[in-house]
Length: 55
View 1 (cartoon, rainbow, N blue to C red):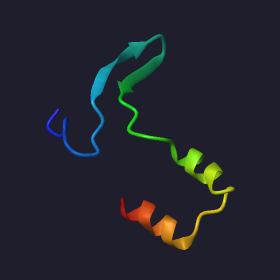
View 2: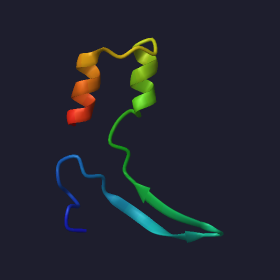
View 3: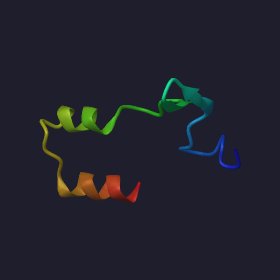
View 4: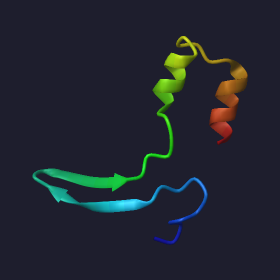
């Protein structure tokens, strides 16, 4: 919980075991990468790729 509340760090809502699965529930920080990929007609420029890698 050391990083919780920091910039770009999602808030942990709950974690535990359900049936045979380990589960962690966190805040969604924004659109998923596939949404960006689809928005760009499934083509990303070199600049976009580098910006994603740096972030």
